[in-house]
Image 1 (cartoon, helix red, strand yellow):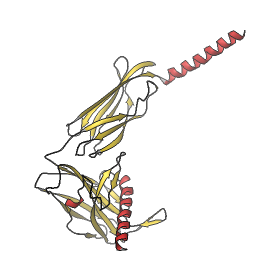
Image 2 (cartoon, rainbow, N blue to C red; image 1 turned 180 degrees about the vertical axis):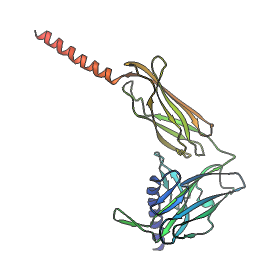
Image 3 (cartoon, one colour; image 1 turned 135 degrees about the vertical axis):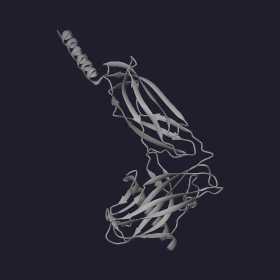
Image 4 (cartoon, rainbow, N blue to C red; image 1 turned 60 degrees about the horizontal axis):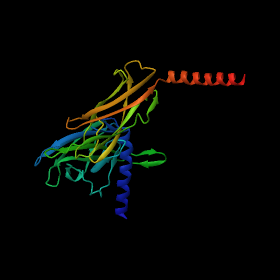
Length: 305
């Protein structure tokens, strides 16, 4: 019975953490009056060394709050959303939770104040080079919230992205570009979706540009991929939308060329994509359709006469 309750508690925490992380800013995760920061941080560690990280808990309520502290491994889905794993997920190749030492199991933060927790990450022989990922979870006691008629205890998480140096494998590739998807296009989209695959063993951030040139080689549209928080985890895929904007007037009809190129944030791997298609300006296409209909009507009337 106790084991079943613990399993239910862990699953509930994972669901709550996922909801809170989706609405988190890059620097702070919060549940109304209690705050944990930073929301995530990157840490480097070398073979045989230890690393430390500090997490701050803020209590903006009028009563002391006790936080139960524990760790959970996490991964990432194709949309970049963090997915927390249960404590029994021992087969995860990029786990970090078991290498983290917490100074205590719980901490009490007084009303209208904040406190810090310093955690230690221990390198062991079984900690492989590359990326490893875990969250330090702070579950508040006595602070309950109600959402959709369900009462739950809020749990906040600070994500740790560890990089063990001395054996990283960088292998980022651009697998798919959402546009153009046919030979003829009328108008341009507001954004282009890029799907990346990370087949290495370390988290990376893709950087790059989307450029569209007309038949005369003029740059007409461009977009920049340069977001610091768009991590792609090892052995995972992620789709990122890149807004594009017009930088020059477009021709009524043109044979355009789209070029996507860039590299990872550490300049270890580069990628490129190129495609050619026929572009027709929407206004020109509308005029052409009206003219064609008018011509058909005139021919029809002449035949009738």
